[in-house]
Length: 256
Image (cartoon, rainbow, N blue to C red; front, top):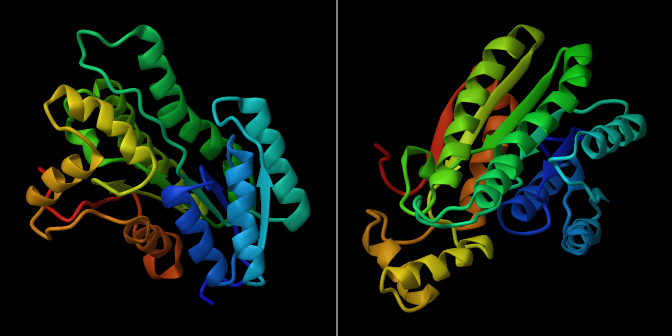
């Protein structure tokens, strides 16, 4: 119960990495608030937590909308009188080669992944500064070092790393640690979006795409949501009190 009575906000907690992270925090005693536009999925995650006697509330939140984020964060604070941990996990893909990428595809991915993480971090900042304590964990990606067909996503995830390091410098004096995880290929519903782009490269389906990823990985398997969630929990724990401004790649391989 290493997070007993800690208050945790998780964006994108309806499925995949976010849902697994929410479950693990609840199993370790945290009270969880899920922010997600997929409110049905968020409620399903919450119900699973509640069946295990955990505490979880859900909020329909567009992370690119400052007012929605601020209102939801304020409600969490009013209910629990503190906010200990923020996990910026909301993410999206709009894959396309750079020559064909539309402005809308660029803006959408940058807004959700990068702007959304900033808005949420800014919203919790004042509460964490007041209490002199906080943990913020961003979700970057292995794509931050470059990924074909994902110039928008790569830019957003690289931007998250720069933002995270800057926030770590600014907020460290107030007892707030800011770090990031950078997953490689993780088997989630979102990763199946890659199937369409894989087909353009002659890979027939998601199963074949996954096999190709395994062959490129020294550990010879793809990642699972719990692989990322375990690292997130470490960075949000007291075990990582002297860790800030760091990116941990959860990719099963060296990243260069």
